[in-house]
Structures are given as structure tokens and as C-alpha cells.
Image 1 (cartoon, one colour):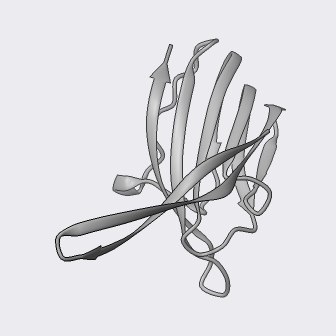
Image 2 (image 1 turned 60 degrees about the vertical axis):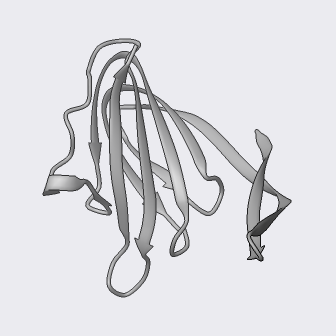
Length: 130
């Protein structure tokens, strides 16, 4: 799915602000995972939706410095979600994701660095929408 989002830039002068809106694309991709390691291809989309069952580990590939992404995890049956070491959550530990069928969680993250020093995804989680 592809949608448009406006990107605003402003020029201020003499107390007047002019806002120019340009069009940009926001790509969304979805998939399912059941008992496997799932890779998010960060160069393919900014919004990722994963329907998960069983024990699932999430990792990533690609991406560019400063890119922002969202990941929506929807439990289909009982699910236990884990993350690769690329994901850095506050407090240095992964949050406790809900395991119940139908639970929805939202993970937002920004690519902090990619390359020789290792990929870092600075992540935050909103858990258990239901």
C-alpha cells in the first residue's frame, strides 16, 4: 500500500511564516510469521505490519541513517515476540509484549547508525491495544 504524506518546510520573516507542502510517499508492507525469525526490509517500507503466531524474533536489513519506521504486531493466537540486538529499547531490555490472541502492539524506531559500527534502531513500544 502506498499513501501520500505532506512534508512541510517553513520560511519565517517579519513575523510571517510561509508553509510549503510537498508530496512524499509512505510505503507500507505486511506479512505473517509463525515460529521463525522475520526480517524487516527497511529499504522497502516505512510502515511494517506483522501478524504473529508462536515464538517470533524480529530482525532487520537495510535502512538509512535517520529513517523512521513503525512496526505493528498483531497476535494471531498466542505469540511471544523477541527482537534482534539491532533494536535498542530504553532501559536496555525488550519490553514485555502481550501474548494473548488479538493483542496489537506498535513499535516505533529510528535508524541511528548503519555500517561498520553495527546497526542501531532506537525503539519505543506501545503495547496491548485491544
